[in-house]
Structure formats: structure tokens, C-alpha cells
Length: 154
Image 1 (cartoon, rainbow, N blue to C red):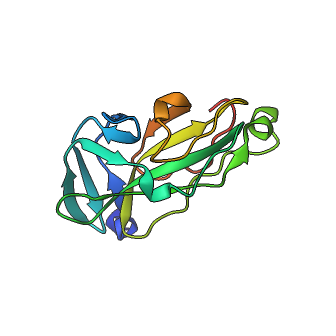
Image 2: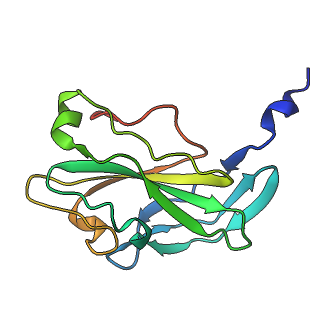
């Protein structure tokens, strides 16, 4: 049996990018350069910042949460694309009645990181406008999409 057959179309990130808040109040950044593979081809992404304005319609009200996916595409510079999962109530998450869904997969792109963003009962969040430091953000560097969403404990 040839195990290489299972890797056709593989889209993975091979280095930890060090996802964190960016230099600007409305940016995120990768602190380190990354090597990644899309459909069997090697690419490199330099460290740098990127705005969250691409998901500006994903406004969180008070006591809400979502997971943002940060994807690298097959270009010479490794353009970062952003999408998000369903917006849910943090109360439902805390009570264990729902999990925080992951963003949908993107064809031909490698998932470099996830940012779990949540507000409390007194704050809201507008991507590209509200500083990520004004709300609760948990960063996860990824190689590929995890198999399940986040719970209150994860």
C-alpha cells in the first residue's frame, strides 16, 4: 500500500505562526514566518499583520462569541483570508448546551490559525473597528482544521 495516495490535495501549515494581536488596535498578526503546502506545492508566508475588516459584518453583541479562521492561499506572498463560524451566546457555551462551531473550510487554502473571540455582558465587538484587546481573544496556531469546535473549557 502506498500511503502517499492519502496526501493528494493536502493543505497544511508546517510552522507555528505565533498568532497574536497586531501593531494596530484592529489587526491580528503572525509573529513568525511559516512554510505551508497547498495541493502538494510549497509556499512561504512572512510574518506580518493583517486587518479583520474582511469579516466586518460579523459583529458580536454583548455576551456573544465566534471563531475566526485565518487562511493562507496559494500566492507568492501568502495572502491571508479570514472567515468565521456561527455567532453564539456565551451563556449557551458556558452552560454546555452548544459548542462554538469552527469556520467553514476554504478550498485551496491552508488554515494557519484560529482566534476565538468573545464579549462579556458589557462589551460588543466589530471586526476592523473594535480593538481585539478590548474583548476576550484566545489564539490557536493550527496545522489544519481541528475535528470539533470549542467548548467552554477548550
